[in-house]
Amino acid sequence: MSLTAFSQTSIHDFKFNSIDGVEQSFSTFKGKKILIVNTASECGFTPQYQDLQALHGLYTDKLVIIGFPANNFGAQEPGENNAIKTFCQVNYGVTFLMAEKVSVAGDDINPIFKWLCSQTGADFDGAIQWNFEKFLLDEKGKLINRFRSAVKPNSEKITSLL
Image (cartoon, rainbow, N blue to C red):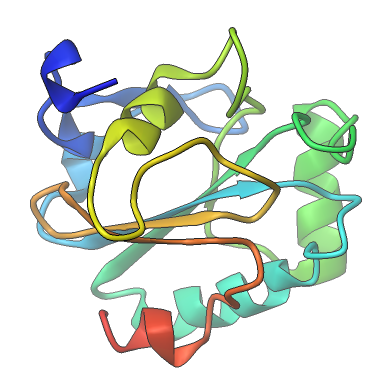
């Protein structure tokens, strides 16, 4: 699907609900980079929460990290929002923004992820393949790059773009 199929031209045109059910607009993050990650609590990549939290601490003045829990791959996020929030806080000290649980693949894909996966570029386009894929957007809400699950949040591939 091409970008022209969407009326949205940047991530700032979208809204989402936080894990606490509060509506948030991406437009409030204008002027900061945004790292969007589809997360899961029972995945081999789940320890990346620790790296995401460290990144949040280091770059809080210029980067917003948002975790979007999803149960699309291997049924590795079976919990509800409250259980997910507690798990993240207790096990990884997560203080970065978490969204409510969404679908990131299939017929019920969340519009944010449908838009993100429609962006084209060197490594941008295509469906999400697994948990902990990362989308880095610039201060204007445009996709800079996309990183598959194995790329750690604190890798130079990501930090060099912050």
